[in-house]
Image (cartoon, rainbow, N blue to C red; front, side):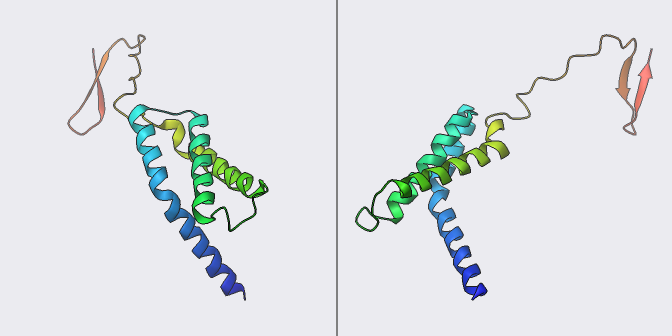
Length: 124
């Protein structure tokens, strides 16, 4: 019995991931291209994917629409969008080349160079 529950849960997770992959990929590419890092963007994307999943998997005639199903899918999408923003969305559009280097230390009285062995040597 437990094996059936585990396999069913894995199938549902795989199906939900496969269903949300394309819209999430489009949202990620747009956020990276335009540098959109707002948590509200990711909440809207997550909610939209959750709502689209509800509308795609359950036609209006299949489930009674008392608002609970829509709220459940929107809530799950919001949580997914928030988790993605916490993990990766906050840094969207930021690459290593666009970060400003640290300003030079004005208290250094001598310049430092790298020796042939990679160690720093001071020159006066």
